[in-house]
Image 1 (tube, rainbow, N blue to C red):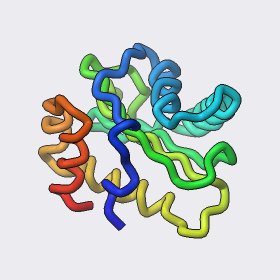
Image 2 (tube, rainbow, N blue to C red):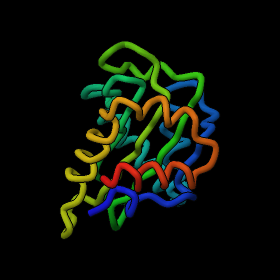
Image 3 (cartoon, one colour):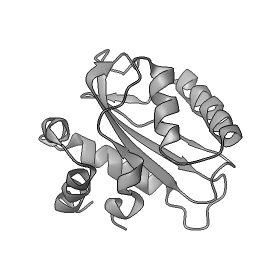
Amino acid sequence: MELRDFFSEDAIKLELEGTTKDEILKELIGLLGLDDKSEGMLFKMLKRRENLGSTGIGRGIAIPHCRSLVVSRLRVAFGRKSQGVDFKAIDDKPVFFFFLIVAPPLEVSNQYLPVLGKIAQFSKEPDIPERLLKLTQPREFMQLLEEKSL
């Protein structure tokens, strides 16, 4: 299982416009191409998850994630906000990089936790924050995933 297999260039946005946690979550959800009702339900689920504790894991990275009936398979998206956003991260620093993960409540392939783990592992690589800041095209994000071969 390669991390890059779960991402597609149309679900990568290198200049998020939102300036608040809620706006960023809505923008990331928008990358999945769901209908309005599904987007609203997914936003509520992600908010509920964030209320349990921020998915901002430190080093400028957040991994908002949840299970929801609005998707039939595991879906992921990536967004970057160069100015950073207060996401209530565990290190109290702004978040610049957002990895959204949404999976159905029951998935036969059981990829939700392994993908979450791989993204966390990818995020811990010492050069990742700096390299994510330098990306200019979604294709470069895919190449970075491939290079790290996670």
